[in-house]
Amino acid sequence: MNEAVLDEVTVLWAEHLGAPWPDELYRVDDRNGDVVEIDGAIAGCISAYLQGCGRLDPKRSRILQVCARDLQKILPRLRDEGAQHVRRLIRMAELIGRPEESVTSSS
Image (cartoon, rainbow, N blue to C red):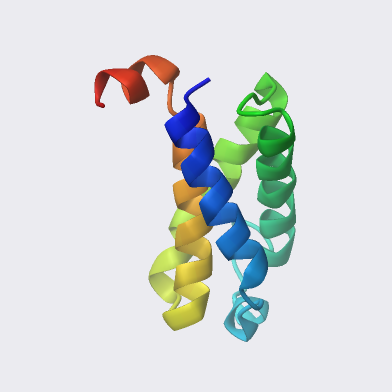
């Protein structure tokens, strides 16, 4: 477990929970999935990561990465708060999904 990553995800998650849901995200129709459902799935994975003190089981790790890829595809169509909301989720998924060796070797 990398404490710096856990700390950054904790801060981003608190920011995310404090932000209002962007109305723009209700209007994004995408063949990659419903943004509301993707948001719920990724939020569950991030919550599990934080409750596990920086550990995430392989199944949730895969779900997290699939959701982040889906959000990456949707991101170019978003503006303002919608884009910020999605970027924050993607950033947390990237942090959590990084192998610990690459995080520690880049520090």
